[in-house]
Length: 231
Picture 1 (cartoon, rainbow, N blue to C red):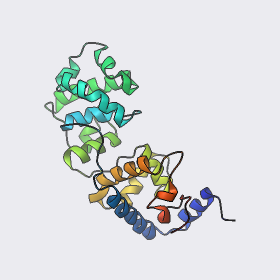
Picture 2: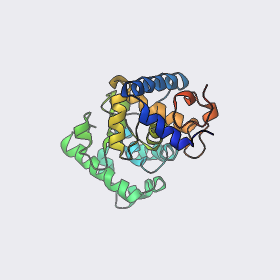
Picture 3: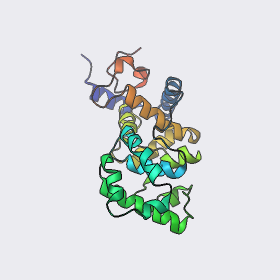
Picture 4: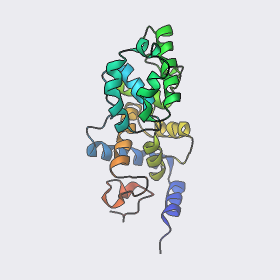
């Protein structure tokens, strides 16, 4: 009888040389790129500012929920000044269904005030400047930089990316910043932006948190956590 899946994965990861892991990571990328040629952010937006707001709203929520909120929100609040001028409680009500709406409203008001006060109302295009904005950490900044400006500054690690990074034996860390650093070492910089999208697409379609479809997975033969027979 073979080892349980968790033990087999641990043994594989422990024995794998660093150069082989990098080779396997790039094979994973190529296979997913073929499978999901149109991968990209699911958050609807028409400019960097809308993407920034949508990404803040997406924390502890789903892209589908955010996309139901933002058409009305973006029609009502055209720019940073409109959010800052909103009556107390009004913005909170407008974004209530996204969850954690009080905290998100504070962040949105704060970042909009900073955009107006320090950046001429425009969304900055550097990691250092973006992460100074209230409610904006590396993950949000990576989403905005990659999707709005085409800048590969890092890899946005959400729940899908984190889960697949562990299952695929690319990182064993719980700290998402450490996961990001390990992924950045495994993939070429030019692909960082797409790594996020490809892993998210695969996490949604195949590598579900509770019931991964290993028998249908194109990565089964290169995934140490796979429950499917080797091909």
